[in-house]
Length: 331
Image (cartoon, rainbow, N blue to C red; front, top):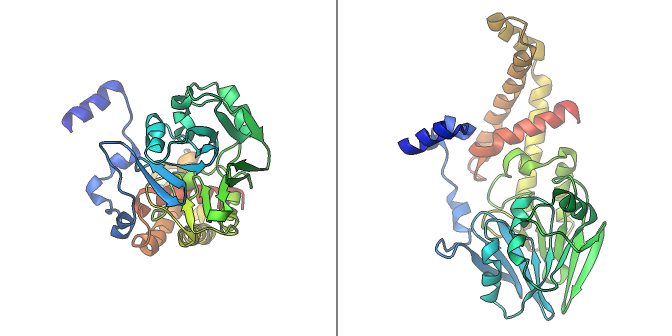
């Protein structure tokens, strides 16, 4: 540990915020969350699991993708950078069909940066939203293969005996758009970076760039008929109850932050802080008000959710901060 600290100092990397808090002070992951997780072989570096007939989830324990085996080949949904080198090997464990189509749910490199390992597949069809394709051409990132087929709005992908529905509902997460991927016949739905079953969302409401739409996305998900839900992260397979639970958590965040923000006297908090530092540093004075709202909101959220979802003490303050930005400036 001492060597790690010295190395961090030498190379000039700032210590992350979580390191300022004792690691022993964090709650263990809920046993109920651990019990439902797919077990990942750390020797292999991945696991592939059938969740519906001829529909598989691939995961390394942090990221997830999906493989839909059809009579005309395999449709791969996303190619995470973390286990991209193992995708073809994993699929070969369950079928002799080759990958013919790769669908990008969105443009973030962590979910599609492993596509570079598929560059040698002959005539590979790569599908994305038009704006995602335009963005990737502009980025010219060798990790992310450029789509050769794009569309706007919705597309029904017919492959062999499967019909895969791709739909862009609204902008809630990535600037270029996100896809819902469904196979209605199998009641299968994949929506990336909204929720992780058994956990609170990732930092800043799963990096949402539009909280107004993020608050709506749960109802759009629930409008689908599904009993298997893939969220793109960690190892649990979700269902409608997971979506409902995360929706309840996010709605509680919104109502709590809005109530505490509206009932906290900004001038009073700033005045109390000014008695200690004066009135010159306006940023610091305003930050004292914002931090008061965040801390008071967290006390409530932590008390209600710490025993229901894993990661409350890791990411809920970032959720509250993101929600506060929305409540104060957009709502």
